[in-house]
Amino acid sequence: METSLPLIWAFLIAAAVFLYVVLDGFDLGIGILFPVERGKAERDLMMNTVAPVWDGNQTWLVFGGVGLFAAFPLAYATVLPALYMPLILMLLALIFRGVAFEMRFRVDTDSSQRAWNLAFSGGSYVATFCQGITLGALVQGIRVENRAYAGGWWDWLTPFSIFTGLALIVGYGLLGACWLIWRTEGELQARFRPIARLLGLALMGLIGSISLSMLFLSEEFREHWLTFPNIILAAPVPVLVIVLAWVLHRSLERRRDFLPFLSAIGLFLLSYIGLAISMWPMIVPPGISIWEAAAPPSTQLFLLVGAAVLIPVILAYTGHAYWVFRGKVTSESGYY
Image 1 (tube, rainbow, N blue to C red):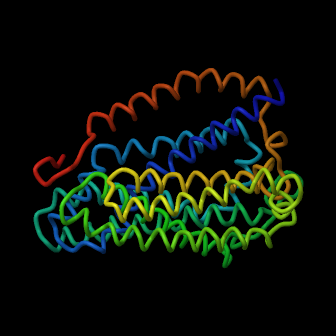
Image 2 (cartoon, rainbow, N blue to C red):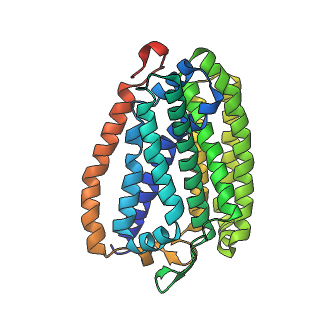
Image 3 (cartoon, one colour):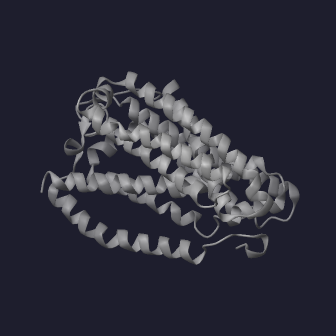
């Protein structure tokens, strides 16, 4: 029980973070792609594709943060001081973006709407970039001494973390473009096919560059990927990434609607699995494992009972919302 409970909670938190990345990723991607479209009608249509679900997508971020705090308090207590700045900027950008989402539909003048459009797009870029920086800073390692953060205020800001921040902007942009291909039709859909193809190529280059860079960040990363028998177990991941990239390209060429979005999600999932392979069993690289950071078994068991009730409820209302608002979105079927 003492061994299995931390594994269960690590899986639940990892799943929540992945669901947040995918679900909030495509609506952040809408904001990232906002500068591509200049017309008010086209921008309204882009917003209406995510209007019924965007706020619910962020539930998984809350679940992941609260789960980390309750189930792995040592990890929370070391990660938060190390990443205060990017995390606070991310939350402020998400709040500002949420206000802009609502306000741009309710202002009357062109100048006010342009301001809120800029706020919505800018908030999407800042939130995404900060999430990427947070990921890069965590992967490159957090200095811990005596079970406390021992680094400096700016340790999170490195070339590698900036690179991961830019890569996530491209990734979310791809998710957003593929979402629009799935949920819209006509000229708007057609315009985003070449954009999705370009973003897909850029993302593949960034995934390869980051993967190679990680091999030089840590000896443990190299051991997990390049030593026998690990190399055999890990080899399917890069192979499947190449296969999915080909599927994405072909589905865009053949003008499929849903398959590009599914392929983009697959690329995120494989990247996430690759990250898990690199970091396992560390929850805070390079020195704090899942078991070292875990709360007492009684606490984790108590929390698991609550999660067993809460998670099905979240999945049910999320699935219901996507089902109710399924199908193509047109200018006549907007929600605002």
